[in-house]
Length: 354
Image (cartoon, rainbow, N blue to C red; front, side, top):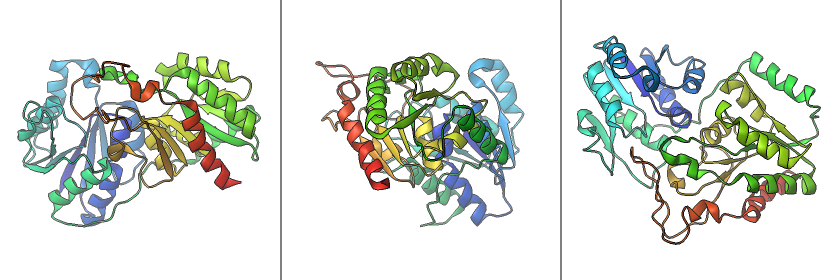
């Protein structure tokens, strides 16, 4: 059997498919498992997983429609099955799967905008559930593909190597962060496509939280984020002061290796939240409009900090931009989430470690 994983959405989504990769290889050991990815961070992860034979990397957003169609056509008739990673509720992804021409085309039947996004182009499907985690949805889809039930639910998979560990050790040494220091990681960013920037907790709140953790626990704060989040990291680090450190890395694995040094990771709903889960960290997740049942940190200790408003969750998987329909305070779910709430969740973790 030759499987092609269509992991064309973000890093977090790709990570949440890795337990399914483990199961596919467990039940069909001789299978060839390849992946088609669009983002470099996903490429970094999947190339490290020895269960995946080949990673096809193509930037569909940059290359345009004609180059994209030519590239996809080059993969045609090479696979027995294609699997659209959940969530991927976009017609473009379903069209790519259809062009590739596998006999079995796996995809979720979404509760919203499924017909408009051509979900019916897939012929092996399970129905989405708002009460089910993304990892479990991916597993159920793969179970249906290979004809099994009630399989395991593995942890997220993101292997690191010695070079990654050496990078982390050097960073800590250069910044004089000692073995006994309490290190806490922050990720104040998240994806910005489709207005998702509105899921971010405000920078000044991260600054206040950092100062409180430094004052009360003598913490060292590591600020993580991608190249497009440099301005955000600089703003927060400047506000925190000398005990704040900006993390700049060459790739996602270096960030993950440094994250492993953190006793606690405090983050928006973001890809690094799932990387933290893969590293088995204690995670405090700041969640506004998203459904925590979908995305909570998988197989690790975590606390979700959310206001649980009557209008939440309001963000569901579709191509539509994130929008708030409240008449009083737009994105109240994140704007009125206080520093005190997040600090309380963090302190509960820190108290356990004392």
